[in-house]
Length: 290
Image 1: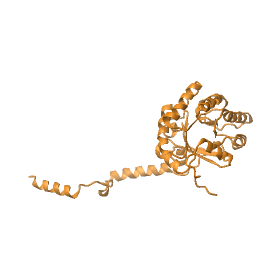
Image 2 (image 1 turned 45 degrees about the vertical axis):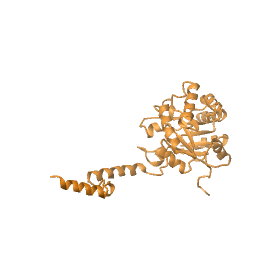
Image 3 (image 1 turned 135 degrees about the horizontal axis):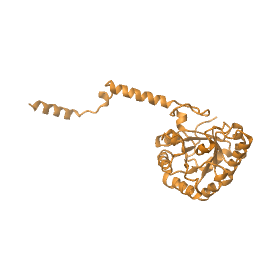
Image 4 (image 1 turned 90 degrees about the vertical axis):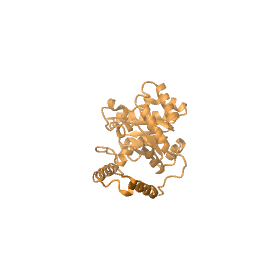
């Protein structure tokens, strides 16, 4: 099987929908700055999400709740500069759409107009259907998000797996269906049993993007810092660490400090020098001094 990035110059919403139609997996990752987005883009990742997870992995918040719209716009603009092929999606943060749909529309317009996002993502199912329709009517593509919704951490009482009973699974299935019916082009399934993810994926016409939802979704997403080993503490069960960049960076910083204290950095070869003519002139001037 050829696993090289498909030769498409730009990932679009229709392309994402076609991936499911043809049974091809979607690759997705979060990114919050220019270099990370550029690396993901050049690696052939289909969808780059500027997620509100930046609150925890970049800004040091305890949850995604404190993240502001201005913070997400700032980071999306940076990721936009590094993304050419990938579809760029921006999270709408907590508080930007919960009060009323007008706020949500205004936030989404800013995401597209000011930050260069090509779609927005928002959390919630049936209760967000009207807002999704409003955004789609305004020509703004929407990615849904059901199951474990981190912006609802206080209401859920933590980050536990959702849909573990038949009743709760039925509610999540109804939420996913409502997201599709409202016009979303894809939906993230987070923190749900594999069996429920299979049921939703088979029932929906739009792609499902899994994170902690098993391997049967139409695509997968991970937080870049989790994948790269740049987070502190034990990773979640579903995280596969493909690199240990945190350890490598810590060693590089320790080595840098050591070399400075030992007088080994910078070396003469890492220093700038006068041209020979200037050095000779300086030496002559020095000889003239009493």
